[in-house]
Length: 295
Image (cartoon, rainbow, N blue to C red):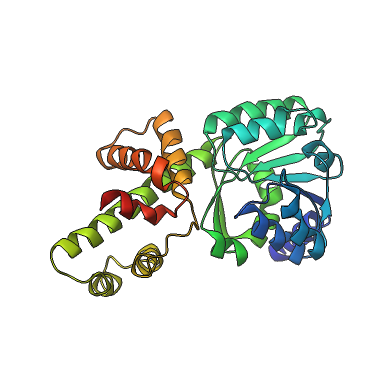
């Protein structure tokens, strides 16, 4: 019986009109997952050329965030930072220009818990509901619906939206009230920065010791330290390929947010300093471009 009820909830949710705002490296493939699942999706992006692929796949382009909200029961937002969130919500023709009674706004951006709490309050005053639901994973996981989603907000709203999350990720977990998802993402990205710096330092140290990088990485990948991050970023180092999958400037931004939210730990502090120093020169490279800063 439980399985039947879950299936009924899923089908009911998938009959809703979906809005998607933000079609960057992550937003575009995530929105595409919903379109491929047969959902009706209305999209908006400030750079209109990024809407073309989704329009070809069946999405409906809108002229503004306000227009997305007018025709959508649920609106996903996936943009780069707090300022972009503030603009999408509060600027002229923003989300808050509408009566949002009954609407659910799902902010999947990696932003501060503070901006989520602020916008949640505004959405509530407009009659709607808000979840922060950032993701762990990169473009490949987004393209295959294998992201990990961490959410903050009302439990009933999370359960209502969860069938849609299942198209985007392999796991969706509510970790607390509004802002908790953002906080969890900053914790994870702090660890990610530490891993990136540690891998870069290990490769550099190996080189100084006369050990070939490919030999070191073969050892690491066959040891208890082996993981997906070392496998892919190690290969990027070997290939001298620092094209951004997750740009260094974004992890530098995330570490600033973590600092603002209380990060004060030995390794975290070192990673913060290293990535802030690297950003002006290497910000457009991939996160593992931190190796160049450390050479």
